[in-house]
Image (cartoon, rainbow, N blue to C red; front, top):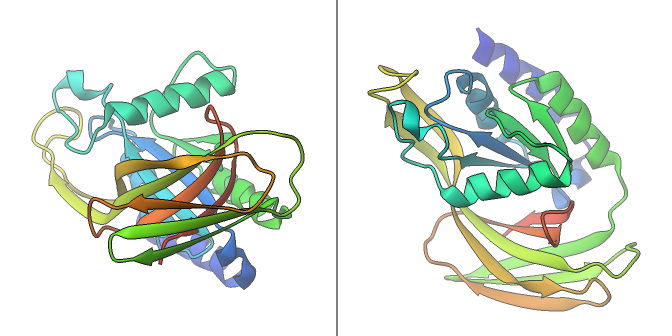
Length: 233
């Protein structure tokens, strides 16, 4: 019932979304863990985000719940480090799961899809400041970044992220013992393409380690706002 309600809710949003927003999708990062009993509703929500063209949903499994009896098989310490960096940027001393971070700026506790929807809509309506495109040819992604309406002299990290669209795991211990769960858009690799100075058009090239789907993030250095993103096709 919860799964159906969430799917119906987001389907209604998708119908009313501006088709042009697929050219500048909003990035939603979900920090989650298989050892967290309150995470499944947020994990379910990621399945719906993964179906949207105007959203890039990424599931980042963290490792700090591993001690309670089940080691998350998708966890990466880098994800925990990234979440802690977001907390510092936001003036917070604590990290938690499930947490969703929208365009590297605002966070949503758990699976509060009404709050998440409001943030996504606000970002979709915001005028673009950076244009980014990515062309994939074999195992190489070529990224082009250009200023659109950007101010200041900030430095931006150009990152290529690869993910698995669907992974299933049977959890045998811990708070979710006995559950077999599907996870959407599980992040597998982070590849640094370089840094952009934000003043003129520049190209970057990255060699991919696998044939998994890839997306490109343009993010102000030191875990600042994500100002642009695109899928590598």
